[in-house]
Length: 275
Image 1 (cartoon, helix red, strand yellow):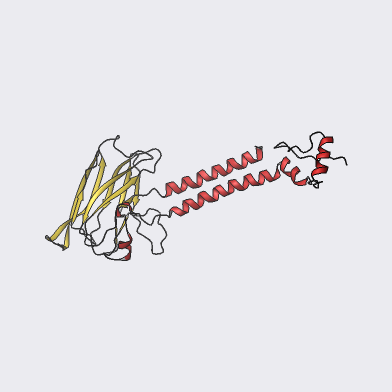
Image 2: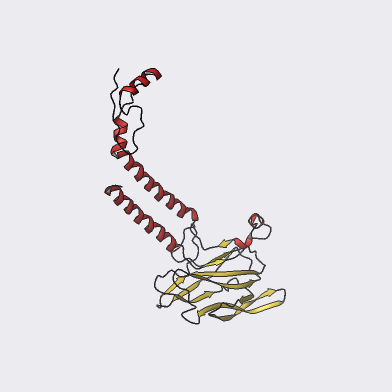
């Protein structure tokens, strides 16, 4: 492989790593995982927290439970190596449930790693499950979150969804609710595998980048092969006319090497045949 091609392929590979690496880092948000959930129901959700930093670990996660659409029951699930501190607030208007009115609800949960060993290391993620219900009568619930790293850096996942559908810089986790009996709820055949993410980038974007990069590499290979000496020589070599079986046999008996296939990878030569 020639030096120009090696240099071109190296540049293309570096571009591919940069593009794909940026896409991976950009999509590593704090998100909320859930099945298909409807207003009035109880649901098990989980906040998925990846560590984006290459040098620090995630040591704390703070999640705000909105009170504009209060949730009467919020319960945490133990996470090994982490503690959960629950804060509550009084409601000006109590929430009505099957068990009566609820005037005090959870408005914040803070998970904290008990040691450096249990912190979320670079390249890893951890889930923090919750039981919520009954869910309010709305189409979505926004949970603003703060992610604290061992180096003191705090990432604020608090940006609400935009009206035009574009992803904000630090999107807050969003739980989407589907009315019971709607087409979307009926179409969900495997709710446990549904992932609800905050205005997540489509996976097809990453696939398109990968295909584009692959096409560029193949294009370089085709370009180089078209300029190689043996292919160029083969293109200039005219094919002698077929003299027919009898004449061919006669010519082969007089010309050494006639009728043999050319050696692959070598320029073609025209062998003059005697009459």
